Length: 311
Image (cartoon, rainbow, N blue to C red; front, side):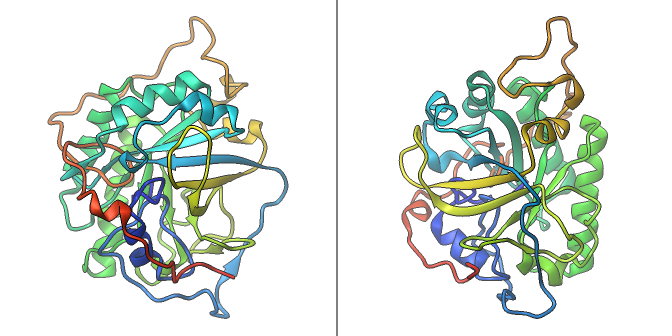
C-alpha cells in the first residue's frame, strides 16, 4: 500500500508526524494525522534482516513530479510503487502517467492507496479499481495492490481493523490477488496481530534491519528512507528493498510463474487480467494516485527530523 510523498513523495512533514512512532516510516506514505509513540527501544520489538539477496526499488507520488522512468531503471532499480490516492478526497495527479511508464521502462510495478479509516471504505476501493482500470489495469508481472495503513484517524482500534480488513477483502475479490499491507512498528498498538497473514511492506528509516509491526516476523518490502536520491527523479524519493531474488519477486506478481523476467513483456498471446468495472469512480490520493486534487504543495517542502528513525 503506504502515502505520503515520502513514500516517494509524501511530504517530509508527513513523514515526521507519522514516523515519530515506532521507529518506522510510512511506506512512502506519511500522513499529518498519524500518531503513535516510538517503540524502537522496546524489548518486545523484533528486528528482521534480509535472509539473502535484495533488490532495489522506489515508491513515488505526485511529489516527485515527472519521473524519467528509463533513467530510474538504468540506475539499477528493479521495482517501483506509485500512489493512487490519499483516501477518496486526494487522488494522485501523477498516477495515470506513472503506471504505464513504469511498465514501459521494464520495472516491476505496484500501486498503493493511503487508507483513511474514517472515510467510506467502498468509495476508496472503487477509486482503486477505477484508477487502475483507467491506467491500463493490472497485468501479468504486476504486484498486488497495496493498503497503506499508517493512521487510525482517531478511531478505535477495532474500527480501524474492521475497515482495513474490509478494504483488503474487497480488493482481493476485485482483482483475484491477495493485497500487500504497508505499515510500520508504531501502528502495532492499533492493528495488533490482525494482518500477519498478508505480505508486509514495512517502513523503518535509518535502520540496519527493520523493526517488525506486531503480527509479522518477516518482510517482503522495506522502505529504508524517504530522502533517497535516484537518477531520473529531481529531489528526494523513498527508497526500498525487496527481500529476495528476482525470481522471488516475480513469484509475487500477477501470474508470477509466467513472468520470468522483470524487463520482459508478457508472452505473446497470454491473456491480460482484466480489472472489474467500478460502479462509480471516486477520488482519493495519498499513496497510490487515485484522485483529482493534490495536497497543499507546502507540505512537500517542509523539512522535519524523523523521530522514528532507528539506530
